[in-house]
Amino acid sequence: MMPLHYTLSDAHDWAGFSGDYNPVHFDASWAKKQGAAHLSVHGMRALLDVKAAISPSASDAPLLKCTVRLRRPLWCDMPYQLIRDEKKAAAAIVRDPASGETCLTCQIAPTAALPDVDSVNVSRSELDRPTLTRLQQKFASLLPAGQRWHFLDALLFRHLIQDEALLRQEAVAAMLPQGTTLEALFAHIPVIQTHQESLFDHRLLADWHPHDPAENLTLETLPVMVIGDLQQGAIIRIAARTHSRNHFISTAVTLKIGPVAIA
Image (cartoon, rainbow, N blue to C red; front, side, top):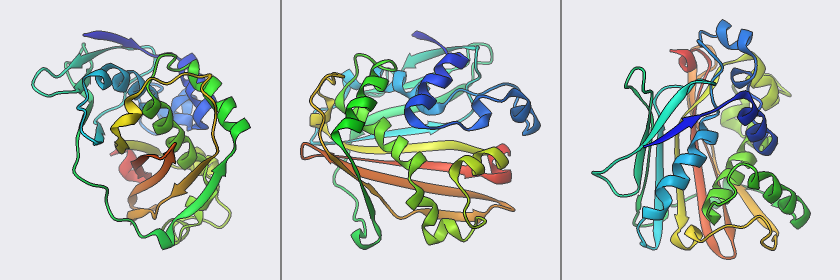
C-alpha cells in the first residue's frame, strides 16, 4: 500500500504540462455549483503514480494495453491509498480509506494486435525538438523516474486537450457553438474523464530521462466517437497516436460532457 495525497500545487503542475485548466480542479465555487463537494484531482495526474507503480510488473509481450477506469473523483487535500491487486499482474486500485470505496482501477496486460483505423480521417501535427525538450523538463517535475511510455502517454493526452482540429471534427463541431474552444467548454459545461485505454510497444517500458535527446514527433488525432448531445449529456471518446523511434503508442480517453458528467 502506498499513500497518495494531492494538493492544489499538484493541479497547477499538471495543468502547466498538459494545459488541462478545467475549473473543476481549480475553482471551488464553480465546482460546488456543479454538485462537487470539493476540488477534484486531475485523474491523469493521479494515474502517473499508479502507472509508475505497476509498470515494473508488466508483461514482456510485444504489445501492451493499459486499461483505466475512473469510478469516482479523488478530492484535493484528501488521503488515498494505492493498493496493488495481488490477483492480477501489473494492476492496482486507488481507494478512499474513509469509505473503503474504489476510486479508480488500472491494469497493464498483453494485447494481441493494433486496431484498424481509417487513416483518411486522421489529422496530423508536428511537435518539434525545442518544444519536446521543454515538455520533457516540465514532465520531469511530475515523474522524475518514469518510463518512456509514461511521458509519451501524457504527451498524447496533452495533445488531445490542446488540439483545435479535434473540435473541428464533424461529430464534435455539430454539438458546439461556432468558434468554441476547449477552454470555453470547460468553463461552461461539466466535463469529466471516465476511462483511458493506451496501447504501446513493450520497448517503451524502458527508463525515461528528461535529458534524452529530443526528436520530432508526428502526432495523429483519430476520429472522435460521440453518443448523445450537450443538452441531454454526451459521452465522447477522443484518441491520438504517435511513433517514437519507431515504437508505437496510442491513447484513447472517454469523457462525459454536460448533465451526464454530474449524474
